[in-house]
Image 1 (spheres, rainbow, N blue to C red):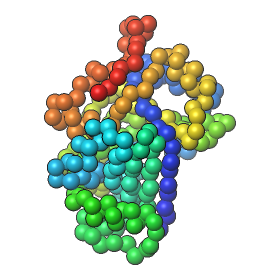
Image 2 (image 1 turned 180 degrees about the vertical axis):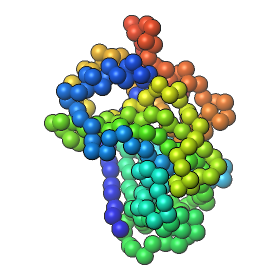
Image 3 (image 1 turned 90 degrees about the vertical axis):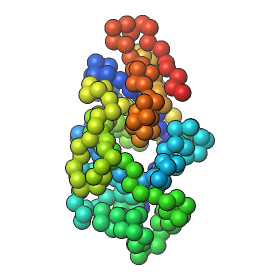
Image 4 (image 1 turned 30 degrees about the vertical axis):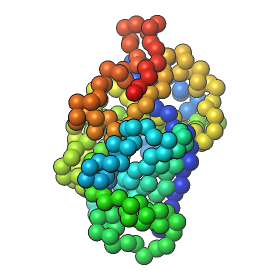
Length: 251
């Protein structure tokens, strides 16, 4: 059973289409698209009946964790998918995941039928499932374009668009439809780096007045469903008046 572990710093930036296109043009000398091109990522987020995991997450504690099932594209029950624990501690993101078939993943998380293999990540997921009474909470999908550095392949930038979700028929095999969270002409950029961000990248962001925001896809969907989320506070870029762009401190 393949295992994957990521440890890195991640930052998020929200931008409208004009800023996105300007940024892509400036990044072209330094970065290139990965082999997957534009692709769709589909997720099931598991949570407790009272949504304890996402409620705790949006309180911005020093440590938070979540469990999700992820596929690349729409799978069938025999397709290999990823079961992943995502943890964040003092701005460092740790992702630990195993690969198994979609049917195996459902049986493991929802029926307690454990895979026969023995490894560290499985033991961590065992403990997570023992600690929380989990069930499917949210289906979340988005289209992603990923870039990597021409000189430093470990530096990655992703652009997510058409972020959509649903609370019914939450199987990964059920299709990637859902209600949009953002306007269609908005992009969520994430930077993923093991160490320091390249100076040239910081300079480009400064030139375009692109500043980081705190943005949780699952968290903002949860708040939006309760009329507790305001898209305006994330609209950092005002294309009609670039000189007055400032960083917005998101509560």
